[in-house]
Length: 258
Image (cartoon, rainbow, N blue to C red; front, side, top):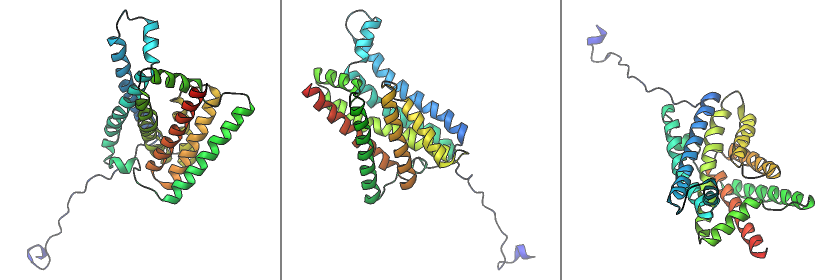
């Protein structure tokens, strides 16, 4: 019998692990809400701490004053980052895909980086020009108010970390990382994923008015396209951070000269 012949050993079948998968449209949408909830809870925890630690009675006016403080906003944004990372880890773990692979946390070329910088500068300058032509403020009032508050309590350095490091990483992990990845492999394909993830990202910036919604959405579309062309989330994170840094420095200059 062949099974007893050492030259023809029996064939053994080793079980294989289930193939990795990607969340599709509804899975991505629902888990995206979960990640957003994690971000919200992380930020709300800091705000609640400052409100409760405030001297004097706790009322609506006091809460609004604390929430609008530069230190409170900065720390809440910073604390949102670990919450987002934890929520994403929970969402990605069932797919059996490596965290970095799922979110395209890989490097890119200098060529793509330069293209991204040039495109971002051109887009932002175009919106600034339109803003001046329409007689609108170049920077939203929200940025100026937060910066003044941060200057008053000596937390400008914390604001820079929050707006230029923590916020870009958190928002890119969610929008161009998780949401884009799942939606681009659904019926939406790449164009629909870029548009819908940009819309979701714009919705995170409810502190601005309709005009700046347009600018934020267009920046999101550009970042989504660069994410598609480069297959690198680190590229969009860096560009997002540089854009926020430029906006913060511009706000500092406007506040200082105002």
